[in-house]
Image (tube, rainbow, N blue to C red; front, side, top):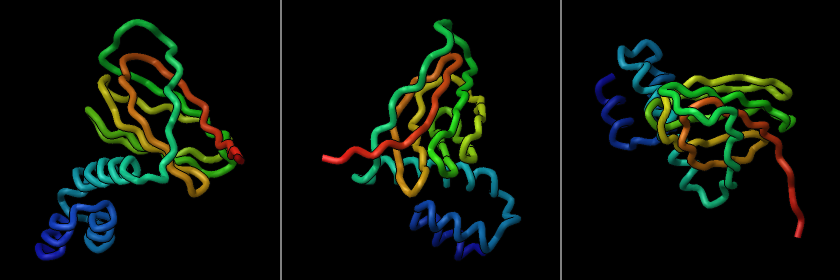
Length: 141
């Protein structure tokens, strides 16, 4: 197990850490490894030149709060995965047509979303209540 951990640590990719957890699902650091996977996936998606730009969320409040919430509706026609990397690292999955709310500590987040085989990313400074509806449109030139 130590060699597999060292190999994953050396590679430090989301794939390597996922493979490690597949082999050792009861590892005592599973929670922190899952957080590391989310942060790595966000960075990997942001670094991919095929990643589309995600529009900003709609603010529901103008006052500052130490906790933030983001309500997301998925109108993509596919399952939607949204990852947050900042003060906290969280991932939510939303079925097509579904709505979910994620609660986060306020702060700046890198955000990556995946749906229908496409990735989108951006950054947000969260400090209250927000909402967004995800949909995919294709433009031909």
